[in-house]
Image 1 (tube, helix red, strand yellow):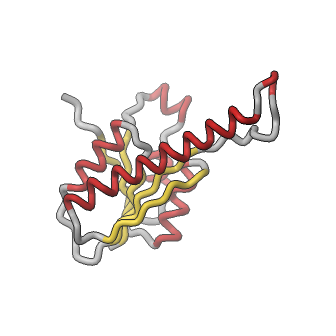
Image 2: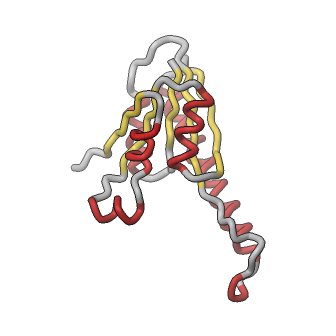
Length: 149
């Protein structure tokens, strides 16, 4: 079995990773943990006196956060399931698209991701990554919701 685990480092993703780590999975399961970050495409333009170094720093911070997110998720999953083959990758792009594309490239049987639990207004304004992935993926998609106390 091949699984894509998409995390963004948010509390919702951390809850999803913790829940996933406790699952018994078949032998020879491969898990690819990805975090997709959106780089600022205005790096070559300096609007209103903003230095291009600002954009370079912001993009580097986004990449580092994505790398920390996948590393933390991998550590947790490996601690609970040391027999799993776990790969990690931080990828620049639009999450809705990259997650589906990576699942196809990897030959995933399942995509697992967290839900931010947005209401109707937020989903209309911000869009829902989990909803878009569920609609466009060619494999099964599991959306894990953070438990409320």
